[in-house]
Amino acid sequence: MKEKILSRLEDCPWGNTLYWFDSIDSTNTRAKAMAADGAPHGTVLIAGSQTGGRGRLGRSFQSPEGMGVYLSVILRPQCPPADLMHLTCAAAVAMCDAVEQAAGFRPGIKWTNDIVYRNKKLGGILTELSLDAGNVAYAIVGIGINCLQEETDFPPELQSMAGSVSMAAGKVILPHILAADMILAIKKTSDALLSEKAAIMASYRKDCITLGKDVSVVRAEEIRHATALDIDDDGALTVRYHDGSLQTVTSGEVSIRGMYGYI
Ligand code: BTN
Image (tube, rainbow, N blue to C red; front, side):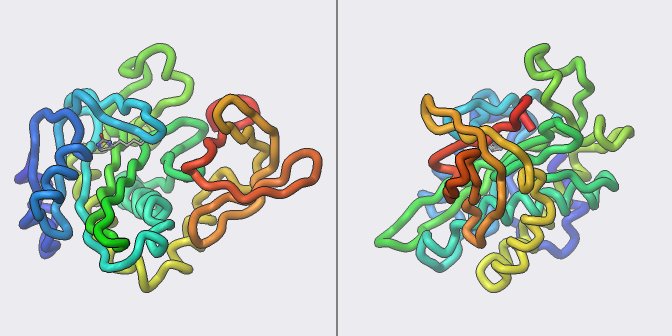
């Protein structure tokens, strides 16, 4: 698998620091340990399966063997954390580019970090930062995309809301092809991350299916209905509640659900 991916990375320097694991607890967890030990910018960890795949808000990410692409990239941008508020959004746009390149259709983004297509989640992004004296020491961008699954491969309780790139494309998309396109897209985005923030966020707004929708804003035990109005260049979402009041919320504070289900 590693050789197949490398053969598609051509001149991408990240191919020189790519680590393949047949099975691992979590590529993000291992990437953090490697980054703390000094692994350089552009180190890529990719696994055939994960036994403890992690998602946002402490959720787990199902990572069955050979079915998806599970990878983490170590980035070392030289900036304060405030300049990286859009990192997860940038990675999400890169994933739309990668899926379009590999499978011929462009998925959408459910704010902030879910890659979706026709009401089904294809994958997600988990970004983790480590700081050193007020600056970013490293960022881990972890991405999991369901690739080969058919509907019955998902647990019954997930079948109505989970999908795969192959299901959405209507043909088999091989994981090594998607993996290589994901790595190339993340490399391109990381090169432009600080210099092209406004353009990246303009693409994010275009891909984001949440904008204009009626949504439920979920904060701890409280759920409020609202309309999603806009997303700023830091990825924060402005909503209008049904009493007319406006609020700008971040992904750390709230999660967003559709009024009638996941999307
Ligand atoms: C989410 O849906 O909330 C984010 C899912 C992120 C999953 C990926 S798979 C590779 C990397 N390793 C992890 O443990 N998580 C991310």
